[in-house]
Length: 448
Ligand code: ATP
Image (cartoon, rainbow, N blue to C red; front, side):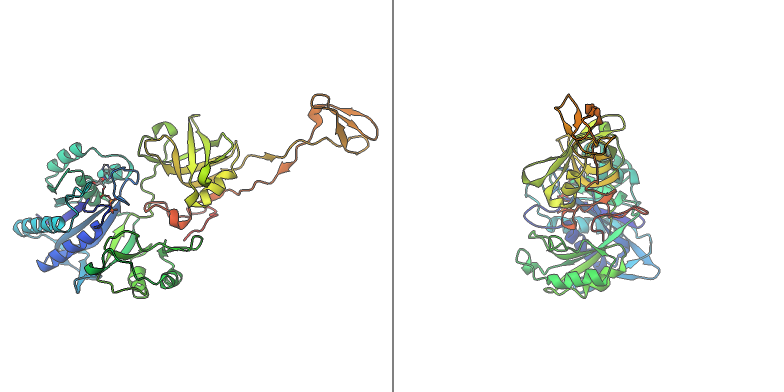
């Protein structure tokens, strides 16, 4: 075997655990054996609509070998620096095989095995798996049995405990091509603190976002929420997301918090919008996501809880109900301003219900808005006419001349909305959600 890819998934349960932390254990195992990390460890988010995910549908991968070239520091685990090399040489098959078995043992030891919905898996393979596998796993539902056969043909080593569903994430994390990445530096808590209240200074997080503009989704000025720390009993203390790899490394030192036990910088597909693909309504199946362009065909309705829904027809005339949820703040207020005839492009996902849960709205062109009809002015003497009843038209109060009902005027109203792209408020954005402005477009929401 040459340098090997390891992919892991499904090690955690809602009660605790974290697959990113398990990956730090593999980094420790590799260092102890003199095996080097090649490139960056990868945190890959998959189809956000999968019903059996624990939280954010994350899977992890990393490549290991004998490092060459200038090394970079990407973390610290158990007091030892994590070094990464740009390229790697082969390690012997014997060394690789025993590393894979030790890695699997570490995965099992640190998984919530036995808890419902925890089916840990490890996939080891000596080359990156085809990118098509990633695209299917981020956009659709992958059949586990088909994938198992595919992995066998690729010559992958596969280890699973419980159901073997975890191989989907483990393999897809290895298959991610790594293009248009973002980065997340994750800092972890000491084991004895897991489950207790996190000590983290919110103001230092806000200052870090101001000082390092490459950081994103650190806090939400509208809801005042700090977005870097989870609210689960998992080992993560905070995660700093960024559009470049170096700023989170520098920013980490400025965050005031309880002691950081270990930290690792991951290359991620977060903020990539990779789950979204332009599709007509007819091609959006259960658990899928899409960009859909079309025309608004209903007056928006405000539902209980402040959610707003409207019906959109695509180019083929197929209709879909779009739902803008209250926690996204921006989207329901934009949806409420839409009127039949408006041209929009929306994006979002569906589950078993056929409705599209919106993740963003682009208002492309607004139809004219007209106010209620008014009596016309008399064309002869300029005075306002009076209505004689709905079907009888109007009569001028001065010269008594009559005008037909069609002479009524309707003032053109200014729309309450401007064309542009609208994203949810930061605290309601999904991990994969598109990151904001597309080049050359007006953006009318908080961007980062
Ligand atoms: P966390 O974010 O806390 O790490 P999670 O949300 O990633 O947890 P998992 O416990 O990993 O949730 O469960 C997700 C499961 O769904 C995994 O077994 C994974 O292999 C599987 N899975 C992910 N994407 C797909 C897909 N597109 N098709 C089929 N199965 C999938």
